[in-house]
Image (cartoon, rainbow, N blue to C red; front, side):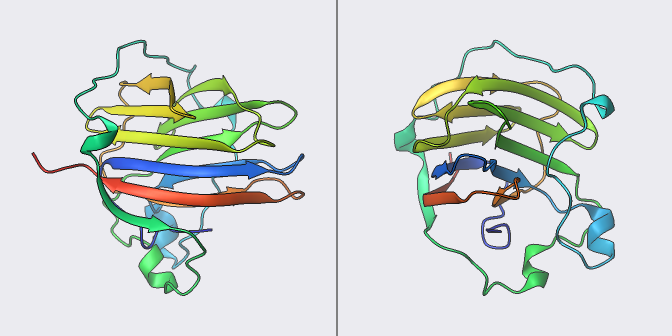
Length: 197
């Protein structure tokens, strides 16, 4: 389900409630359009899995989360409960060649009850893992602020990344199954903008 045409924004909070059949690999990804792909008129790109050999070692940041952005301070601008297939393909793609190639993602890991959390700019990747059995319902959330990406699983903070790869350009939401079998079920999606100060 590609919501990127209607959910593009710079900074905010994204929440997704989902579960998956055994064998499915759920992915919730905030991504920018790849400039090279946009040049050729193709808004889709191959994000399915990162080839670990292309990237530096993972970097973990242990800094504390700043509570100044509490759940009550987010502005609820939109809620999505179904596919957005009626959005024109051209609206899903950013055609600017100045757009950075970046993503923030949560992905189920094959063969285990774990999830990979990632923040990427171009070929630079930081990632972490957490326990997550996606055959059960879970709520995943990402808070993206200038210089910080915080990942949540069922209301519990699981990673706070403040390293150099935090995206700076607008990103849109894509939900998908990276396996050929099984189904990913999405109960709801909520997208919040950062409140004006």
